[in-house]
Length: 411
Length: 116
Image (cartoon, each protein chain N blue to C red):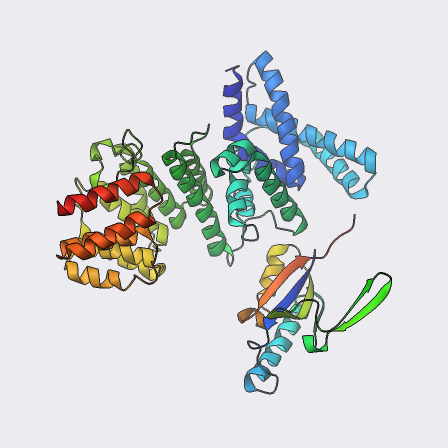
């Protein structure tokens, strides 16, 4: 355990809890982060020599608090600022009185995540800040995941912390009135982190931390902290079910394999069971949100032994329900595809064609159109649609797949 | 913390004062201003005359240049403001959203700068 990477791993696991607790204690984001960084450097020196302390968490927190006091003291001597001097006195008094143990330290991560995902911050900043503060990723790792330079990402994080402080973004859990919107913002960030991991793996990008795993870890924490809020559970179920197919999704050459052609033996059975049971318990609360319904759709796919055996009736109903909550044309498109396997293909095609205008340039639309035209006996129209689909695809593997599809149908 | 809520809207979207909608809007502003005062969060607030009343002044090469018109010609114009003194951005945003113009215009919320 004296290995540097082991220590770093321990620290990263605890980073969010440590930082959230320090921010609550110090009332200052940047000071908390700098002090924790100082404590980490001390830890690397001490632990390498002496091994891990009994509670690395308590050790780090205590050290970070002392480092914070040092930092304020240096600052006060330099600038003699009344407010900071006051804070210093308070902190020192508390420090003497505090008896540290892991159990007595309150978990402030919920406050932290709501602050990081505040809608007053730009969406990309929310994602980056959440990864940095709760995930404990380094700026370099986050930059790499976003294909940004480290400098640009560091700038973004500095600006975000400055806005939190200067614009007065509060460090607290939103009230009942604010809760639905603010929770939606947090869940959106977790979902984006997962998707970022998804696209990173398809791009062959490898960073130390798998962003899909990280999104799962943070979402699990959210489920725990929000006492099983149905929407949070729904998101966790959705992520688990998507993640359970990770080994079936790409061929050895890196090409993408769509759901209908995946080798279902590669899906993780135990993860599917967890996801399905989570979505069932979320839906049992009687407040079905978008993530819960998407998870339910994913669960229906997961439980089907083959593409043909899928309960398309159920999927059609679920997409219809999802469209009521989120009237967006991509959901309507998926509804059409599901409908085409249950009822008349013509009916599905008619609804699909009504989406042409709003989904102009959207590759999956043309792929679905091509497939439906072929099945309804219009090979010329299908061929044209395939060409459009290929034209709008940005992924070479996908282009190739579509090309093969179009050839297969007309040879 | 003190925040200024800057109220922007385009001319076309703003109800004219001498129409029923304009009268309603005036009533709504009276009501919301009373609410801000009751809650003890309002430092000040005013409506501005339209940009056709604006005059700009600047000094270039030591000479004062005075001109008719606003600083920038934009569709959405600054029409008024409130200054709130509240605990955090969340409260400031909550009160800003109560400003009647938020339904068709835009409210920009900015903290007043503290020099320290």
